[in-house]
Length: 378
Image 1 (cartoon, rainbow, N blue to C red):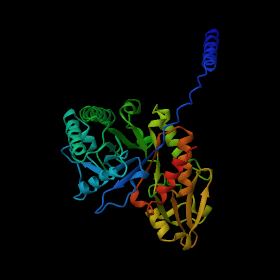
Image 2 (image 1 turned 180 degrees about the vertical axis):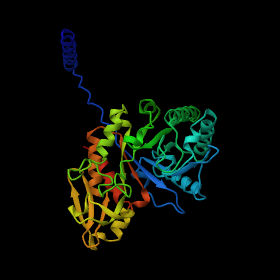
Image 3 (image 1 turned 60 degrees about the horizontal axis):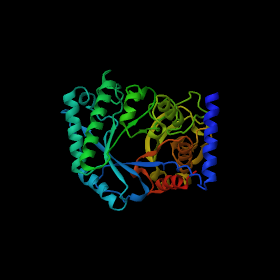
Image 4 (image 1 turned 30 degrees about the horizontal axis):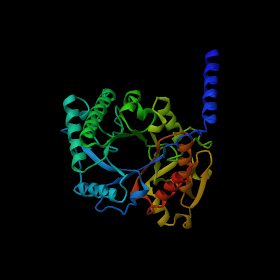
């Protein structure tokens, strides 16, 4: 206690000396700006992306072959990737990152299993980075140690993935020493059992950030409808399903710094059919699954003018659509939900937000909502 008083007394004297000398106290530095990261998938043509609205673009996807090498699987891939890189002419601060993997993209377990395989993976990924003048790599292995997507998995994936990320970090840093640039390394991840194959205390220092896939909480594999990308827990949910806040907390509890966590946003919805007619279709049994629907399809299809009504769950901070005639329910991120996510990220000191995926937007309507919410500040 005496030591604490001495420290406080010294601080008061120091402040007084500054004031008496006429030296104004320095304002605290502003908090770092939130990052806005968008995934852009490959296609026959590049959509008209406004480069200044984004901080990072993750190109999806490169994949891994049985020889453990990373490659672009589609003929359009190199052209699309180079088109994204050209956006730096409009925004020199824009970072273009190559995302490797995706749901059901296999050969990760084998590519991480041995030093030789990890070297083949790393060397081929770095060759693509150099060839296309990229700013980093994003590893989207869904998910180490799990074979949910029908891909190979091993209990050794956890340690091997750490070794692979370590080798990639070393390679990127060495490249940066030569090119005088800083290269990014990130992963896409989900919480709970989906993160059981991640040694988070060991990999967090290797990564610039983690993109949380805080969406697809409800879909064809869940027993009921529900918020596919809900921010918080809904009081209407009897099963206390997954949500964005709980996902972020999972990674914080594992020791991941808040600034290395980016909360995910969905620019698409999940559709459910033949839904039990109660609670406007929310958290009800369904007998058919309508799959995915983009935000662009929701708007351009005029669903709100064709039998659907929008509802809002204040606890989950999430919207849904319900058509009582056709008994169809759609869960999606709308502008109000995205604004709530930006507020949460800012209030809790997270690093930023990411979204899947650019082509699912209605033009850049949702992107504009997110950009404006970030730029508006506290």
